[in-house]
Length: 513
Figure 1: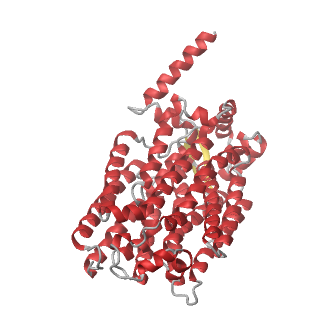
Figure 2: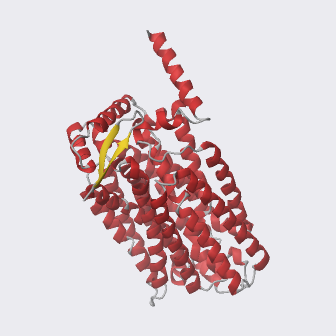
Figure 3: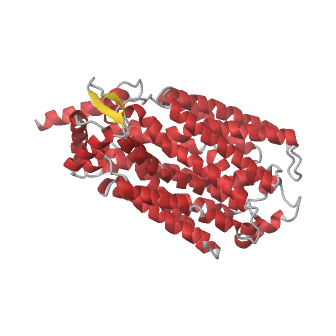
């Protein structure tokens, strides 16, 4: 049945809670949004390396491939329209995330996930049936809307449903599903590349319908979070749901805390404007930089274009897709490790270790490619090629247990209720913007920087290590509505923003008195 424990608040008060079946099932269903997100990320790189797909939609790239030695290995896929196929999804997600902030707040987390599922289903149908580039891009834009709504609602849902002691593990289910989606996309690409008749790419794109339907059904089944119900004035329903998900009758202490958080939230008429206030600056700065750094690790350059990247390094088509499957498996393992360690070792330790390991991998790949890969011939020998795959696996594995899940987790748990929807919208928006930048620019950057592209990302990995070391507080085990008192007022740097703002509020109150 359910395991029981007490969740301690900042004031020493314990919130009774059990790990109930409804929490686990709800989180698994909600996290299927990550499965769709991961599949969308992984599928694009595979289909863009398939000759039949390129011949139909990107004939210039296809012709360029047919003449060996015509161009540098690094420039085979440098085509703005090809990059637009991948990046258009994230441009749409960026725009949709701001509409999703409104629906998350006014309609709830559950309804926003349902909207995401519908967008995913329609976008998948258009992509699988695409007859021209315009139809293909429109389908990607609709999938992007699904990503914007899904990534807005799912992390909030997971953070609010989960008891604080296992909040990290349950929230990372989202990232685990992202990595599983990536892996499935790579496996399906490997299989569909062998389909004769020129329709293998349609199979790859069409199977995105499976996680789309899962998310839609999941959104219909799950209950909305107590936080969301109370925020929308449904107090009795919110308390009833709180009893169900905690598995106990005595939920009054936690319910009263949610009521107080809701009261404060209702006083905020303009969440985005409130987000810019001095007291919210620590959360805003950390969220923006976490999402920026997550993308500038270079992870999505590898996720989007792994088969293309491995072909650039001289792998044949089958070998490049197979290598992408291997690296995808490493990321799944990394996410599983993160589920186990996030609430034990803490967020900071994993992010610092992950940054060091990713930096070593970037430097290693830079050295090997700089010394061994010629521009116009596929001269990377078998031993060096295997070593590159090992280093890439080390990179994606360390990302999988650190910056992949934890950048999303931390952003979803540090904002107070009154700015949480707006904060999550900024999180998704910033992430999608820089994901779009990387997706649109990577193949061109690879062409111009060549092996130096890995060193480029390595510099950002070093900077983000310093950012975590000095500026990121530990949020492990802290109740989500107690972050201000437990975290921000105690941090050596961020406390000045909280204290200064409290002093300003006190002066204004005295002035009115």
